Length: 424
Image (cartoon, rainbow, N blue to C red):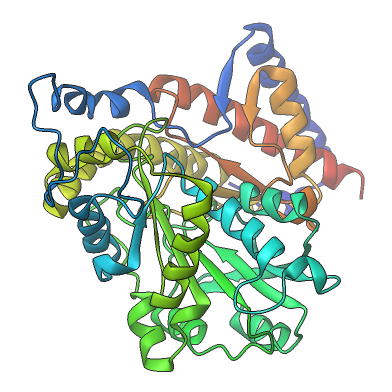
């Protein structure tokens, strides 16, 4: 196909007219399509239904150390569940605390604790205007936490191998820069896995602020969708070489492994950070849901059990990702109006349309019955400086619905591009 920027005005007008006809035809059917959130679909949730039958009224409800899981106590989590997460994250079980259903809660709580009580220094709330570095496009809920606490956000460009480390290394010379959130494997939304060099440069950071923290949100730690998965260096292995273990707080969960609304989460950190977390947790909560922890361990048994489960997830997700990326290739190859990444895992596909067109695409889709992630949500303050990025979530719809959604989306992208070029 001819590149849009090479088309004459008459050619663009003709194409625009044809696209408008296709768009109105779609719109007249009144579709209700949704690619807005990265939720597991029913088929994925059903994969873990056996977990509901693992425990019964006659089950032994004691943990491996004899702890009665139905009672109070066991704040760090039952030993076998701590070990399961330790194996998943590649750390010692003593450096793991098992928490509730969502890792988001851990991250929110950690920032709240740093604001109120500090993390080895004066509380952040007493240090004036503090800042966080924000690899972008990124996870909107990270930005939501920072906005909630009034922490200033600074955009950091995402490269093909991870965040722009030159910028990060420069910014951390400022003592008011207190940390950053990142998704190091299959990043949300680009699906990028940090290169070995990027991980090593993170571990080697020398921030001016002694209370600088990197929230290593390893949400897609084992969420591969094909046979050539990305490999991520273990941040704590690299941090130990640099003596920087205290700088990292790693979180993950089973939200997209077992049940999204009834999973378990965990935090891994250095000895000093785990002590601080548990000291505060002692005041905050008696214990998390140890019965659910026991249920997970009895069902998965070990890391191999989780890996086997994730292969089943991949079989469901792979055709959906292929539907999206193949649809994009069919519609956009040779046009010069869109680019995207083909991730090896995670939950999203990141689509970049012509600068200045993303909001228009979002509005066209909404008007025709297709719900997308709010355009701009993948950037701090909801502002995409290029108005270009659109996060695509293929997991929840079925393949047939996805095909329709992708077809409509592609029409909208082309239509917005024609409109943009005709106004130049």
